Length: 101
Image 1 (spheres, rainbow, N blue to C red):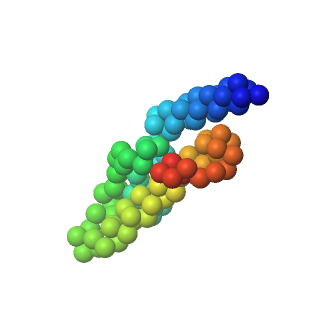
Image 2 (cartoon, one colour):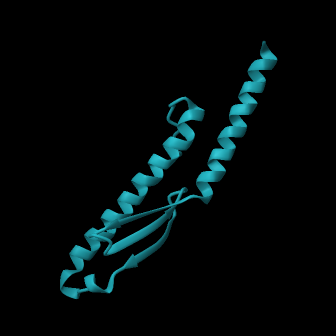
């Protein structure tokens, strides 16, 4: 019985490690303002790129641009968290692992 439990634990550990590797390689893209600001983020919550449409670069509307960037980044973070939950959830049985989900 103890060996079966150990094998199951090792299997879960291997599945968890594979899922984490997949998340490290995965990216998400999110936008705001109808695509005026587009950000790309890794599955590890690292911001990879920010693209800003030239039409929204107006010194008099800096606050609007700041809000669009903030919105796009927060949306990307949400997408990474959802991706992590969908990939790790089945392995963890829905148990939330701090820092991963």
